[in-house]
Each structure stands twice: as C-alpha cells, then as structure tokens.
Length: 114
Image 1 (tube, one colour):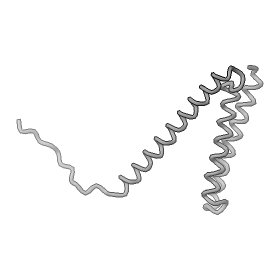
Image 2: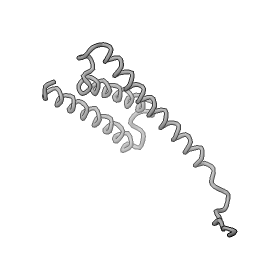
Image 3: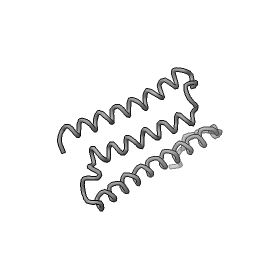
C-alpha cells in the first residue's frame, strides 16, 4: 500500500465527514427548513455507508486479500456497527422512557441500628 492511497482515503473520509456535518449545520442554521428530517437522515445514512466503503477499501484493504478474509472483515465490521447502533438506540429509548417520569420518592439517608 502506497502512502498516496492512504492520503486519498484520508481525504475522502474527511470530505465525507465535512459533508455530513455541513448538511446538518445548514439544516439547523435554517431552522429545520432546508430539507425534511427523513431526507436528512437518509442523506446522512448514505454518506455513512459510503464512508464505510472508503474505510474498508483504503484502510482495511478490502478486495486486496483473499475472499475469505474479505468476507470475515466485512462480517465483523457489519456486526460491530449493528451492535453499536442497536445498543445506542436501546440506551436512548431507555433514557427517554425513564426521563419522562419524574422521581416521586424521597431520598432519605439510611441509618444503621448498631
């Protein structure tokens, strides 16, 4: 792998990250009137998938090694992404559910009967 390929991958990743950030920033600056939230989420998801491919090709050398290694690498990456996304959604749903109901009990210090 030549340094030129690593620099190309880095620049592509940087462009994709800045594009995602820029789209959300413009959307917020225009008070959510730039595009619909559904289209915004779809655009961010598409850019994330493209960035995943860039990471796999330029940094993990997907397509340069044997097919078995490629399938294993892709399976591991997909599993990790699914685990992180599902865990994040579960945590956010739990926080929203528990955040809507205020605590109604009293906090009293426990005393020991020694």
